[in-house]
Structures are given as structure tokens and as C-alpha cells.
Length: 389
Image 1 (cartoon, rainbow, N blue to C red):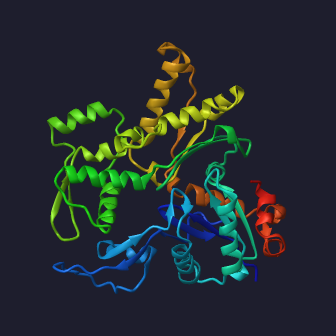
Image 2: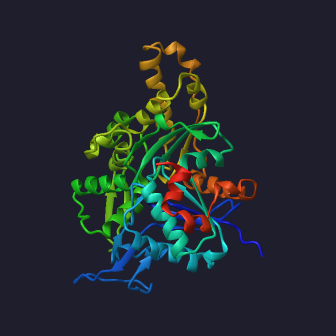
Image 3: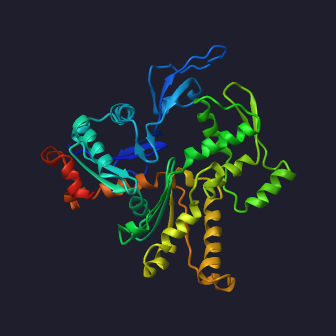
């Protein structure tokens, strides 16, 4: 029996896993491990069994009863032991497979260090026993899933934003842009904004509650000044949310203020350029003769690009940059600017879909896969020789 390669996308926020050729992940759950906590004076009304360790989607709806740990930060695994708990859960319980019978396709963030890659390969070969492994940059996979080989992949996930210009299937390393902010930072910022409003979100378990609020209510403002006026002079933006203890909280202008930090990171104390500047600068850093083709395919990918209005805001900012910096304020030339922001409804799983497609081509490009035998022969030096420093 032929076993399909397994596709694994280890995201800062969510793990997506399935099989080569599939159109959607077989399983997708939060990259989180929870352990029960007991607080006096609190009622724990839940029918779900609390185990010593709750993994992934087992933490759903009971996050307020758990001390949560997130083993991946900014796209890099920080706690391998906790991560192995999640992989055990993925391979053995969710997929129900014996990894020794499968190949493995992995995604990785741009500028991924050889040290981290080697540790990942070591775990997958020696702990799980996969037959062979291939890994590819998330940006390239995002473009593959859209049927493109040239464009800019704008990956905005839970822990990192990176913009990767890609020409004919190859990344342009000198033009890569990365900033370590993402959905988790937006959630933390929303916690602070809600505290200013008078709500007490101080426990680690409250983080999950605010994350749900963010996904339900937050959006990207195309014109922040106009939205601010709307929030101050009307109650249009006011929404209510029922907290786990049954009380009601209200959220208003925080709905767009939290998301605005993606475009103006200084709002949450991060010294960095925002998303729109990153995209513009990464294209400008590419060779002049490539730029027109890159502007024509700006591909959004990742869960934090799912905010309503984000693609419209990015398009507006990019056009403003063109008028200010390229044609010196002459708006009559804006028609020459061929910009296309591609925001597929599937963009939350874009990297997984690209990896799924690439994994089906194993038979036509066997040399791109590192076998377990090669690992046993060369170890980390083999990974270094294959990918470079």
C-alpha cells in the first residue's frame, strides 16, 4: 500500500496537518498546550473532562480554566518538549498514522536558521521516524497555491509578518522584509485597550477570551480618522460580548484601534515599520525590471490577513505611497500603477495548500527530499549542505 506524504504547517497560532493533494487540512488546531488551574471563588461549569495536559483543540471553550503555553513564538519553536506533545497528538490521535510509513512536507518561515531547521529534522527523523522530509519557504508555497510563480507573498500570521518577493519560483533574498509582530501582538494590544475601558483581563486564561473577541469584532479601518469620529459621535461601532463567567462587556473603537497596530506598530510600543511600508519597501528593494510584475500579484496569506477591510487598506496605502514617492504628488499618473491585491477566501490555509500541492510532485523531484538514510549518514552537516548556512 502506498502511503501519501504528510503535510505539516507549524504556525505560531495554528497547526495545520493533512495529506498531499488535499484541498484543506485534515486537522487544524491551536498551537497551544493547557494545564488545569484552580482558583478559589470561581465556578467551573463545564462538562468537558479536564486532563493533566490539554492539547490543541482540547482547550477550546475551556481556555479560561487552563494555564496556556504557546511553544512557537515568531515562527520559531521555543519549547521543543511542549511541541512534541502537540505532534504526538497530531500524528497519533488526529491522523491516526504511523509516521514511519510516510514522507513529510514542512513549511518554514523566510530566513529560517540552519540550527533550528536541523533540530526540527532531527526530531522528525529520530523521534517519529519519517522516511524522508522536504521543507519550503512559506512565501513560495503561498504563491504555488494561487497558481503563480512570480509575485509578493505577504504572510501575516500569529507571530510574524514577512514579505517575500518571488520571481519564477525563487525568492529574492535581498528584498525579504520581516517584522516580529502578528495576531498574538494584536490580541495583547486589545487586552490593554480593554483594560483602559475598565475591564480586568489579567489572567493568562483571559488571553483566549480576548482572542475570540478579536476574531469576532475587529477590522482594519480604511480611514482611521473617519472611524475615530464615528466611534466618538455615534454608537454604531458598539458591540457586546458575553464573557465566560456570564457577564457582558462592550467593545467600540477598540475594534479598529487594535488592528491599526499592524499598520502603525508604534501604537503598541514596537519600533518598526507597518505592514503597508513593509510591502512597499520589499518591492522597491527588488531589481527595477521586476517591480511591475511584483505589483501585479501581491498575495495575502495567513490568519491575520482575515480582518475585514485589510486588503482595501493595504491597496489605499500602496497607492498613496506611489503618488508621494514615485510620481511626486501627480495623481493623474495613478492610472499607470498596475496594483493587484489578491485576497483569496482560503488565505488562512494558503501555505498548507501550497505545501499539499508541492508534496504531490515527490516522484518527479526525488532529489529535493532528504531521506532518513542521508540524515543518519550526514546529520546536521547534510542539512547545511542542502540548504546552506
